[in-house]
Image (cartoon, rainbow, N blue to C red; front, side):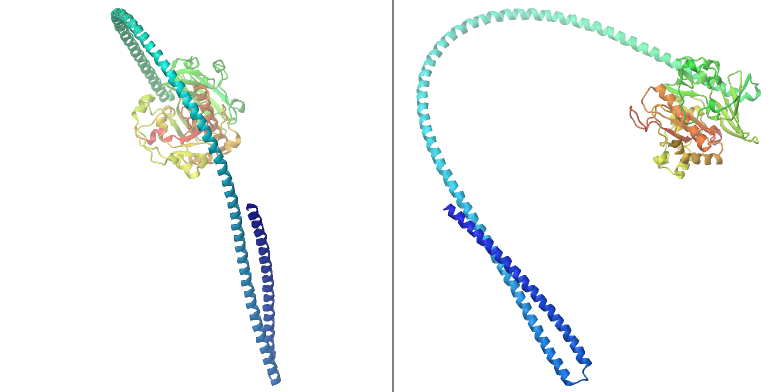
Length: 614
């Protein structure tokens, strides 16, 4: 039956396919009839146009004769008949389309009937399969019943054997109980005797533990007494060391203050003194550095060379300084001599010292140096145009006064520390005496990103007043060494300078990138010739603190040289100072291009005594 149903389903599919082909043929015939109708409509339209033309001809020939009118009427009637025929043909075409749609619906119904017959055939197959599975399940159930019967017989036999074993086990258990009772009585007697022995041992152990605890307590009390004594001794030693350090720091501060005061007093009285020694040097390209050259540190022995430019301007104590020695002229204790720079420590911070006249020594100038018995030096740098830069320095090389004399002897005072004899205090005391900063500028105008700044932003930052008022003028050393003082003035980060690791040289292409700030500074100095700008150098955290401090100062020097070489910034208006890795812009101990940078800020309002009331 299933095979017959399958064959019937296949026959139905074939009939459905034949019906579908017949429907498609009917659709094609209908399409042909529709095209014929459309052609007839086109013919009718042509005939209508001909009739309209005939009407026009009839109108033109109206004067010919009535026969023409009759002909025209006959033609009109023929045209109307043609239109009626065309309408009939169109209705016939629409009827053909309706018939084709009906045939298509009939074909779809035949497809549906064929699908239903196929589903019925599949259901019959499924029923046959279910009957076969039911028969197999019945066979399986009969087999299971037979196995269950056999298992029941086996279980009955096992129960009989288990009962016999239980009887045997009960007899054995009864015998074991008798033996256990006898053994328990014997063990109980032994346990009583052992408990008595254990109690005696515990009593003896407790007495020993009490004795041990008493000995330990006495030892702990003795150790605590020794610890208290040791702690008191340590605290006393720390107090003594702190007192010694405070006394040493106080002595250092007093020595530094005394040296500062003596230097200022000597500078004030300089005009009445005669130089003990005078030397003159013509500066050439071989004896000065350019911005694209590396400035390398040297050893201490190399620093003693007669050709070394920096130390010959310092007093004998500075030249012979050894590590750890307090040299008031240098402003602290000597930590390291790097040849072109010296690292000193004061108030727990490291500072770098160098020749303050290096920027002024440009090829072609003549430098005359006068040395005085108290260690003061006065150098005069004479340029080819006749202008002169006169710098007075103390025995440690610190600038006390710097004046620019124009060719007509007009004097422009750039730096004058002689008016600040009462201004010098230690960095710690200065930090504690200053109030918290108040920022009125937006942050992006206080710390300016040079890459994103235009001339107006740079000019605003370079000419902005301090962020808060103060009633004193700071010394140049205080500005250099105290970040709290420097932060009163906005700064510009020159992030276009990409220093290589360990390098202090600037490539010409990078120097050219400083054009905007160079031209802005030059314009400001032209309008205000006494403006002073601080160029700050920084490093990343790779390398030692001492090496980085010297390297950062050389980087600041390179930026100042580039501003002078490329944009004619007067070098006497620039102060350079390196800060090593102390002020990281990106907090990382690894290599960082962001941290290898330089900055510029105007510091004239901080050091110019004429701008504040002392």
